[in-house]
Amino acid sequence: MNFFKIYPEHRFIHSWTTGSDSGSLLEFYKEVAAHSDFSKDFVGLADMRDASLDFSPEQAMSIGRFVVDSDYSHSRWVFLVSEPAATALSLVYQNIVMEKHEIFVVSTLEAASEYLELDLKTIIKN
Image (tube, rainbow, N blue to C red; front, side, top):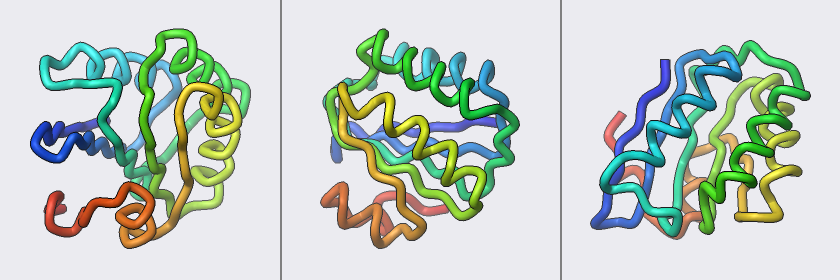
């Protein structure tokens, strides 16, 4: 399942995944972009710590190409990961989307906060 919350007052998008295949992630990206509070200029956190990603590096590249081709973001995003597979897929994705927006792969909320220049512990309450 994929979830998100947009915090316009912080210019921040928080998404989290509890397990996904590449098709559901593409649909999820479209859902987030269609939300009335969405802005390409907001920074974002994609929390993948509870994800069970069931797709190949080629599918991660496809998702990255979709993000680039659809002009999804112009801002900084962080992927928060804890498993080696999610880390590897995030790095494959990162290599594709870096031409459009900054992305950083981290393993702690503190590192994500530092990169996004937001105190995420006070903004999100998981």
